[in-house]
Structures are given as C-alpha cells and as structure tokens.
Image 1 (cartoon, rainbow, N blue to C red):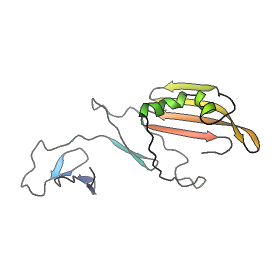
Image 2 (image 1 turned 180 degrees about the horizontal axis):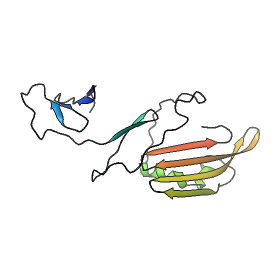
Image 3 (image 1 turned 90 degrees about the horizontal axis):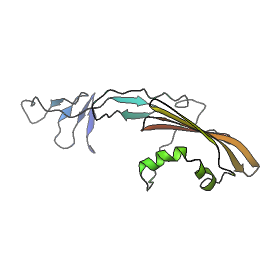
Image 4 (image 1 turned 120 degrees about the vertical axis):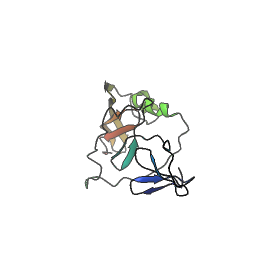
Length: 166
C-alpha cells in the first residue's frame, strides 16, 4: 500500500505497521506480544527483469508457466537510457492488446501509404506479430517493420525497424 516500506527482505504495512516476509507470513507486530498463527497475506512469485518488477498471479496459485526474457537492449551502451513516461489512455486494456493485430489502423492512424500485410503466430504463452511497413518521410518512402512479441498478457516488446530502430 501507499506509505508502506521495505525493510530488508520484508514489507511493512502502512496501516498497522505489521511486517510480512516474502511468503506472506507476518513476522512482526510492533504492539503485540505474539503473532497470531494465521496472520498472513497472499504472496505471488516476483521476477525482476529489464529494470521492472513483475508479479505472477494465478487464481489457482499455480507457479509461473514461463520466464520473461532479458532484453539485449536493456543496459546496453548502444542504446539510449530508458525514460519513464506516464500516459492516460481512455480505453479498456484489452483494446490496447487487440491493437497489435490491427493492421488497418497503420494506414488511417499512422498515415502509412498502404495497409501492411501481417504475419502472426502463437507459441504457448507467447504471441508474435510482424508487419512490413512503408514509412513516408520528407525524403520519400522508406521500408520498415514493426515486430511485437507478447509474453502472456502482461509483458510486450515492440520493436520498430527501418527509418529508426526503437
């Protein structure tokens, strides 16, 4: 919660100052002589990748079914340092995911000269889509491509190739 704190490998709750270890078990209540045996909260496996922290949630408490990739660009001296930006997009998150396979929008939203063909494949928890694009620049048309890979519903990598590589 907002106002909580990390103490070593434990979390301190901001509401009543209880301290919880990674398994979710309460290990300290500052104003109590004993900790109730059932004092615990749910915990989820976490993974730190590419400068982010991910939590795995499964309604049946099943363990993660796949690993998130280490991105070669992250921390590479050949790439610009990442910038944290925040955007408010007034849409349902599902629409953002569906945008990955919406080739038509490139023509009408991004102004490409034509609707690009798309190749897509799904392998287990991973989905990959690739679209060859033609970008219109002040110096004329330039070929390029957009590659998107989704790892489960929560982590996506989009690479733009052509005029610039991002």
